[in-house]
Length: 247
Ligand code: NAD
Image (cartoon, rainbow, N blue to C red; front, side, top):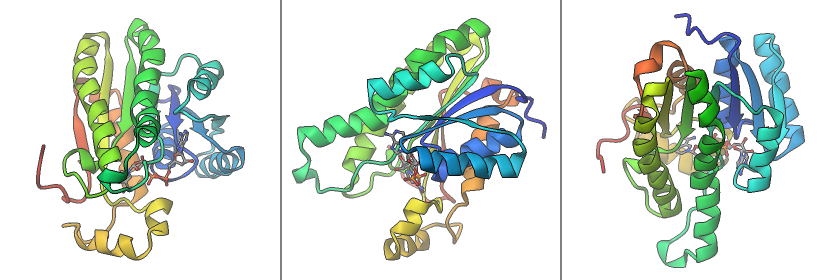
């Protein structure tokens, strides 16, 4: 299927590896001009080279921490007018709920809630004026099925889920969609680093395997397509059937 987004522009956050990079690669494969965002120049340079080799396009990149106002300003300065925005940042640490401090909450809210909220606030007005925009937020399957010790992740991503439920509908008539993609057990570097725990996680997936980053990227590219114009305010699980409970 031709997704009809050739020559659109995209900002993809947390894109030096993992799911963010997979989304950037899938969009570049569709002829989208992508700008990668992450905190380290060297990793970004390597990701840009990999995408360039695979697609024949040349991604730009911005070194920025999207959890800070300064980082988001750097993103805005690089490309003030993207058609497509993919928000993403690393997940907060796993901790027992009795050990969580105000500082832990502030860091998680900055990285996994306010980063997306503020970037939507930054870029949605121009998308609405142009009557085309696609926002995809990478959240987590934990918003549907909370996991022990991941309360920082579950809570901050649920805050974003609520924000999107409201805002997506306020701008739906302007040709701008906002959707959340919920990964569960997709084989990224992070999952590889978990080693033995990853095997235990994979054993619980009804599909009998971990997801491939390119499967996640394909779902993202579709939500950014012209054809997905009537899909907004949704939460799409990419988890091999893992989540059976809903909250
Ligand atoms: P990852 O750690 O492999 O990649 C995260 C990327 O974001 C890296 O490029 C990193 O450099 C970048 N990044 C982190 N914090 C940043 C910040 N503040 N500003 C800019 N860039 C930042 O993780 P992943 O597996 O690709 O997962 C992406 C997101 O999805 C994470 O929030 C993770 O918790 C969540 N998630 C993933 C899975 C999965 O199955 N992989 C499951 C549930 C939730």
